[in-house]
Length: 391
Ligand SMILES: [Zn+2]
Ligand SMILES: [Zn+2]
Image 1 (cartoon, rainbow, N blue to C red):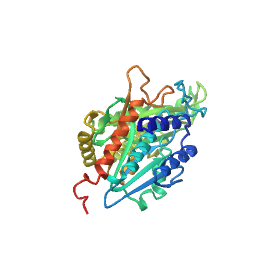
Image 2: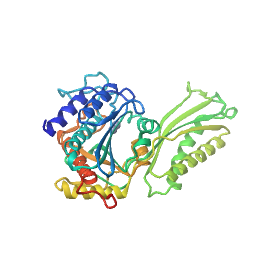
Image 3: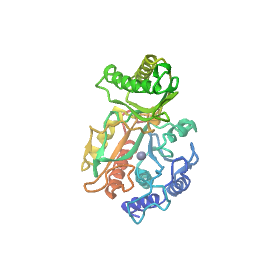
Image 4: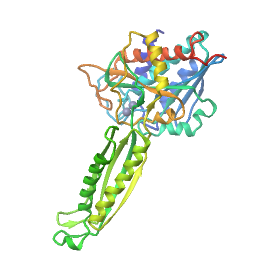
């Protein structure tokens, strides 16, 4: 089958069968069958429903890992496509179906061209990306224990980037994605007799103001980062001062020491607010996935492959960073690599991930496939290869 048809068939099949995070059973079976059919040795149930395929191309060479994600979202699809979700309440609205299709097509490329290649190709199909759990689970299951790759290339489509383009930028690309919950505790009482109470609503409002002010004044403003509150809860009636008020929020940073500073600032802000009104606070801070930091050397290598092999594909190299979370960062802490963006934006179409009308354009699949095939050529070709890769 021609590669464009293969991409489209696999994409549509996966799109029609979306599965939520931690439930990727059918998807894992589909992917494993495809890989086996190409001659990969396949491990399943790697950290949940993770699937890992290994193609030993023979000869001394690098081990290149390609990573894609597998899970869908709890969204009811509204695209009207004839390959739309057959699982009510689940939809591939983040394009993970397209990522799997691109990686499978790249695997097929490697299998069909194995005579010209050397080293090893490791295909990582990671479950539970949307809940930030899959990458860590795969590592804990020993993903890199037997086979530690020399390079890792992960992909994600990006609607903010035009279809037909690639996005490759070195340095921080996504954020440390943390959450917190703070409870202010006081003494409740009558709204007309506040001096006999310790008012947690007053503490909460001061706490929000302090926290926003401190993060504006005490952090390095040249660093990307944000603090946002998303929940405030407390009280039962207009004339009752409650006993406690709870706030929840998120902190996003791109450097580990800035994250630690943010945590200290939150404590200071909430402590001062509680002290002001004679109460106390409790902060539960949950560290989420780390920031994706693209390896500058690997960015340079890939840029070279793309320039020489697919010069017709434009590559954006700036303006791609955001403060979202992406758990491939756990892999990138272990292996030099990058998260490569594949443009999926289209004028006149829905250009938002996680939207019930979002579809990855056909052309995006082809661009992503071309990019991955060029990465395979760059790292695994017998003629090519990097300096120091010789026996
Ligand atoms: Zn998503
Ligand atoms: Zn995604």
